[in-house]
Length: 266
Image (cartoon, rainbow, N blue to C red):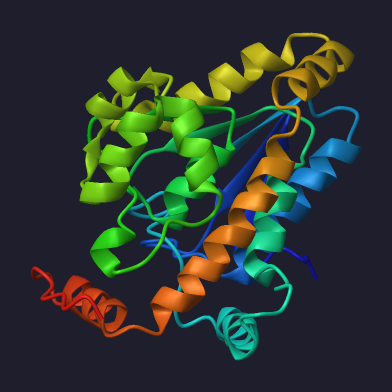
């Protein structure tokens, strides 16, 4: 039986394809991120694969984390029980850092919403192909929460500190056109062409020398995984603290009820 239950893994010549299969919204949990990291490591070991595409079924690319994931709860409760200790990183973030340590270029096909941690997953790729219908949102503060998945490092490096602050502080949804203008997306195509365009870009990359690609990418992304590791350690501490607040409970409830939250600052 395949170890991949939430993703599909295919090979198309020198391009690997990872398809998230948890439609319609593709909420992630520890298992899903672990499987994506496993697939990327499998591609790293495959001499025939030179680039990969990360795509998704359903309405959204990834609408964020599954806050009901038992493994996530266990890790956060353990951290919260001893806040003075040298906290171990949340298991989900261990898997996230593995994604940043892969060796070969990734193109993300963003055909729908990339929200919260789903935005973090999209930004972990080297390039993003999107469409006008897509929406990108770092909606953490609207939940009464702190950004995660390394976004406090990766998003400012990609679109600039002030644009990242704008996304963090407003939790607004950025359209595909805005994302393209800001450099959050590299290509803007019709929605039904997103995956094909991502595969084409990955194919163009795969025409280059595999040794040259890995060497150049290692130089360009030098230290990135370590910066993400440091960021996720800090993000976890803040997320654990804020998760215990009344505001977080109200933020999650208000989002589910599609209304403006009534935050109290406690």
